[in-house]
Image (cartoon, rainbow, N blue to C red):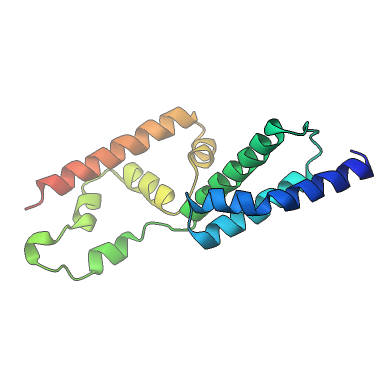
Length: 158
């Protein structure tokens, strides 16, 4: 990309900033929308892709913003591991409302418990599959079955 094209692109991106933020605020919290819009503008400005002016250019920018929002959601989802111990040790409001997750997990086979612990810790299916030497689909099925067994065990609790 030539220097003139780059300057033109940055000028256009600055013009689009407010409109992009307004669009994102309809779908995200205000602070998240501002962050996503800023990051999308930076990615678009640094991109080496040549996009023709007009509606296609606006759609291109919105697609980048969508991808940024998805990336952030995926990252944030991995940063919040399930803390089973906190759920087990928390005092229930009533004794009837208590769910004994620990007892349900103890009913699982050790391999199922290990898989669920890895997922809860934020490991990706692909990482687990690589470590186990199996296909990602096999890990997805094993995790789904382990989750189903935990749910079944929880339903059996009084």
